Length: 367
Image (cartoon, rainbow, N blue to C red):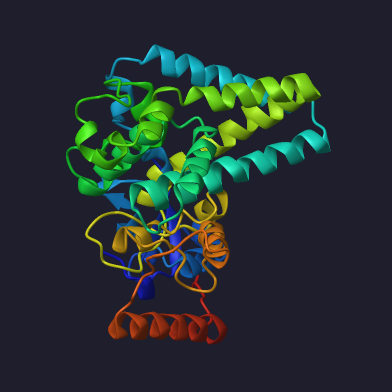
């Protein structure tokens, strides 16, 4: 196992062409020509502070070529309805690139935020799934409708799947674990295997409070109506160009952003807390999901409404919840209460990281 302090260079696996981390003692076995390339990769590995063992899930190597290797997706029957819808939306998203306009692009960005941040992040995830804060019912229902615009299913399905994931993270029963393959964790679990829906018997026990709410039961059954109505309105008001951008392109970007939380943040990134699972923090996934990429923080404090714990951990969903609280539309907001030891550990980690980055020169000796 290679620690961060031992990382001095990266190598290549000549069979799979993958990059791998090499310690000080191993570098002498590498060809000199390859060693000359290390100076371009060393700093990246050092800054990311990603030991090789953090790129493994359940003992399986999660390097790029390992994402599709032995993936469960390719051993399961295809769910044709879902697959055909996904193909159609991806075709529509690609078509949008050929009819670009700044106004259509701006519409896509706004709707991406409405569906991804207000709907999925603040609504489906932090409010309905974990009850990280409370709101008036009208606000809860509004955020739920925004969530349906992401085309990720109704609230009962989404909430049940996510609670199931937290209960069985990286174990048997996890709906989308990278242990079954990177592509499976990303989207394969939706395209193949057993078809799960809002009324699947195995999901109902995970959403008892939603089953008692008539609105959530109704919107879970008719979750496709809001995005269909929105698409029709955009078509009548602005034409097909805006539909391709505001519905198809925006939806595909939002879907893959959410799916990256299931896949990428369990394969690549860093861990602040020893959660006993593969959850990791990922800055770039956090940007794409308005703050959901701080996944290790979330697994350590699942019920908290705030995921970005440090000032540099951008969390737009938390900022949105804070805005609701300022307006009196959110209360009983749960926030992480880190212990004194955890606070001290985090400050020490940041101190030494900054000190080393400014004073330590990383070099590779060529033989």
